[in-house]
Amino acid sequence: MSSPNQSNHRKVASATALAMDDITPAAVPSLKVMRLQAPQLGQPSAGSLLSSNHLLSSVLLLPDSFGVIHVGETFSAYLGVLNASNELPVRGLTVSSQLQTPSRRIQLPSRLDNTPCDIGPASGVDAIVSRRLEEVGPHILRVEVGYISNGSKSLRKFYRFNVTVPLKITESVTRSGDSTCLVSITVENVMEKQNNGGGAVTVSSVNFEATTGLVAEQISLEQNELGGSKVSAVELYDSCGRLNPGESYRYLFSVKAESEAAALRGIACGDDLGQACLCYHKAMGELGKVFSGVVVCPPT
Image (cartoon, rainbow, N blue to C red; front, side, top):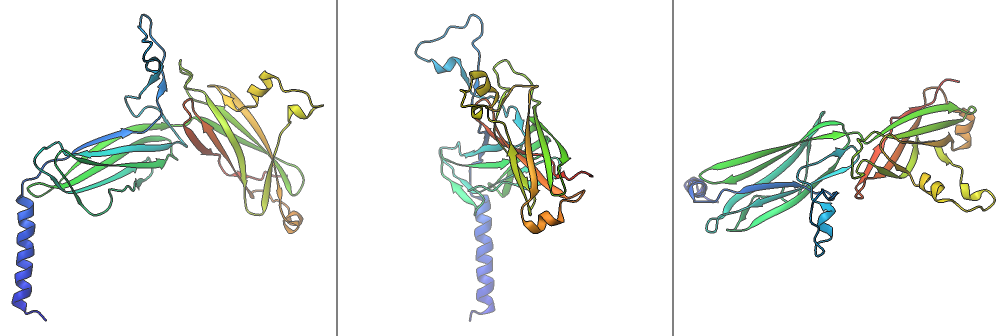
């Protein structure tokens, strides 16, 4: 066993090493944050000269800000920490990020969340954080970088953006017997119309997630089942789920008891039937997922 003098000596040596670390020259890191998103379609302005060697440059535009963000989309951001010094390292680097919503603050995990690290001269580290957006209103991406340079220091940056509703979902329910309900789901595109068509969305799937003990089945009329007739281009376009701003589409589901015992009990007024889940794609293929409110059984 070590003597008290030896233990005190180690404590003094450790404190001395930490003090020396604090005064050792080190570089100050710089933080770069960008949102990862698809480019947008641009329209050539009057009088612009188009180059035959750069065909895509006239129609694809990289976003210059966080842009328009909707509920159901996955928000992804690139975090880059750079050491601009050619001689000194960045020491004791730590990076943390949070997403502040109107109701709570969410920690965004990344590969930089582990133990502190050093960055060599003219080098850097990066990470990607992401989170599916579930709330409407102002959001703040909060990024904090800690480092050691003449003591422990930190720098913080805040990035504000607004999240809006792309699709309005309304529900109506009609009873059809003691153990069956008909649920109508209306989806309306409430996005603003844009000149480049960015306000249109395509509904790729609509499902009704029934409560335990119930089963849901979509009711649809297939045009091509009527005498084997061919589907016209207009009918195919109408059934593809594409919604321009202001347009709406209605889906009908039959929700009924799944087991024989549940059918005998029936569905009572006020029972939870479930909720609709809708997946959509925006103009450049961005995927979103939104849910309706919980649907309940109406009175008889």
